[in-house]
Length: 112
Length: 114
Image 1 (spheres, rainbow over the protein chains, first blue to last red):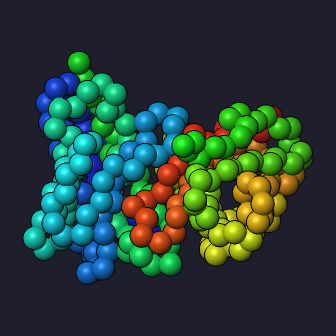
Image 2: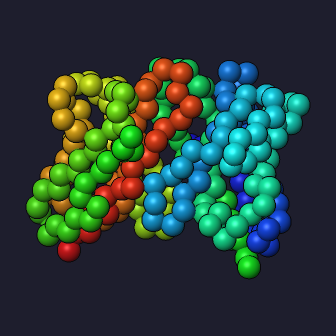
């Protein structure tokens, strides 16, 4: 079972920042937070991951609370192509490769 | 640098036939994972393989399903005697295993059982 809780769906206006929350209150000290997204009918796409520091890459920013019990994925300027299901996953990064466990995710709709 | 290649993209089988789904991992990746996604549902882990070894098959149905990743060639997910409930999208992902940032997924095979 997934160890994260996400809202079922969210809307965001095109050009605005999309802030997707994730609760992971039972996260362990050696577990990372990963974000993936799945655009309709395509394979999931890796976005970003982090342990306790905030992270930023060309796609998004990841803000992790100090107690690590929740995080927020930020898409700074959402476009229509960002419409997708976004999955927040906690996983030990180097663990003999325990498989990624996907929950139901958040369906983000970017509206023109 | 080709990504994870899955074929066929679409596969139609009659009930009782066999389905073979192929996955070629990214160059340099020796770890392969198979996931199934039923219509309007999330991705469910099926099996994790390294070259010639099954590491974790906890998500595989006990009957009719098998997977292999031979020393040479692609990974194969095999479904024998397919039933309508097997209709789904099957995704393969690969990784280097150690120090990986995450998986790279293929575009999937959509299996339709008629």
